[in-house]
Length: 139
Image (tube, rainbow, N blue to C red):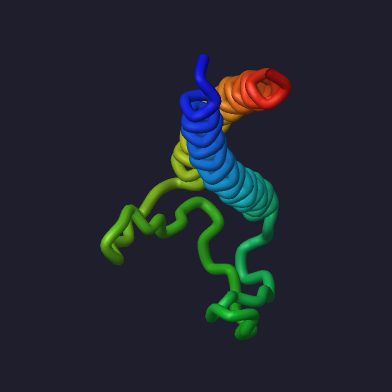
């Protein structure tokens, strides 16, 4: 193969390698985001479990957002309001809310598993490209 063609092939493979590196970085961010969201769901499940064991009229603190809380009283431990999107709240039993959280957790775990598999496949392809580039540079 002519030197010029080899150089062009090295450059093309290097560009592909750079694209894969960018995609890998983005997928890693997505995986980290999924793991954080899964942690939030596990925390929700723990809170729902604790709520069912809470006595009626117990004092509590309710979050107003951004780390701000207000003292409140628990009036009902059997039902919660669940945001189903677009600011719409739906009354659910704590059992239903827990089941919904479990379903979301399972879906996230499935997505995380597929993402991990894609990361592994792309990493293997990047390693192949690096070897090919090294081989071409040695010639």
